Image (cartoon, rainbow, N blue to C red; front, side, top):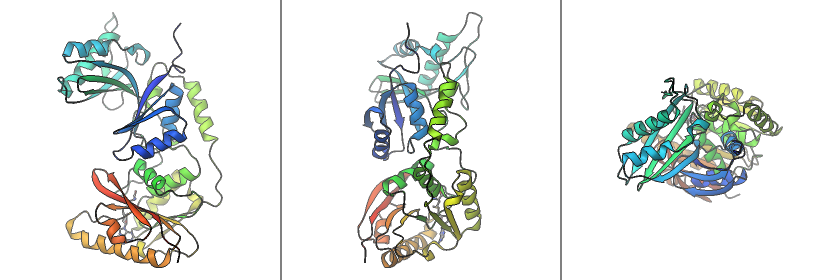
Length: 385
Ligand SMILES: C[S@@+](CC[C@H](N)C(=O)[O-])C[C@H]1O[C@@H](n2cnc3c(N)ncnc32)[C@H](O)[C@@H]1O
């Protein structure tokens, strides 16, 4: 008898933004996933589909959870086609369903990725095509099954996307703003700043409040995936809808009451503050916030708060804005040094200049990428006076 889909052990690869592998690894350890193994671009674990549900619901820095379906060697198109054909596709997709295939290749004989995607699609369609001629169609936007093909040194890995849309699309965002931080990077910034989840958290340049929302969800132990309307695995043939509904309910019950949680945000743009409030409301955090319109450097840091100042600082992307951005960082540094002994910081800005401009004793800079931009996160505890 075949093992039921929900208990079968599989190997999953959880992807993340480059540089966040160690944060993701720590999250996966805390989630008690088995056989976790760090790689470049993500972390492997072993488990059943229920573990993939948990990973999708709870991992704050994950981008996608991919299930490994096969690994084989291939140097010719026919070997590749046969390898893809051997996978048990009927587990996932009905002949009338839809699919999308994405392929990557490096240092391999088979290096034409469009051809690989096409050939993989042909193999899957040839397995599932019925005698009556019904066959899966390609749908790049909302496929019932997303398939990833990776070829490295002639070794092919075929994976199925359990997440569907990228996990940074949490579902709580109503207001976009001009330069929102990705939700997954915001969660990583909060985790790397080692916020104790009790002290007030202040973002003096809060924009759409991505950092405040992600911090609030962390403190209240809310699974970030609970806001999403769907995941890829929900469209798979073997999906257990009743079990999934129970798993969501169980996750919901883990929310913590945090009567003392205080999130403070400030931005000089009134539209951003209105949007921030909309986002915080949508995430159920409005009872815990205080928002102000005004210059971030004029924020009144109260002595004794021992707060965490966590922010994605204005960059000055145009050359003309850069002196202003530098000046802002220097002024913020002065204020923090003068008023914030005993506070912690997690301040994200451009690499090579932010740590120097802020000049905060007791801190260090961690290299990070923000949408391809080389950044650094200045973290640490400011000495008490
Ligand atoms: C890089 S964005 C922050 C984006 C935010 N992390 C988000 O996810 O939406 C910087 C924000 O700082 C604001 N800003 C720029 N200079 C400021 C200043 N001197 N005082 C207060 N806010 C400022 C901008 O309006 C913008 O919303």
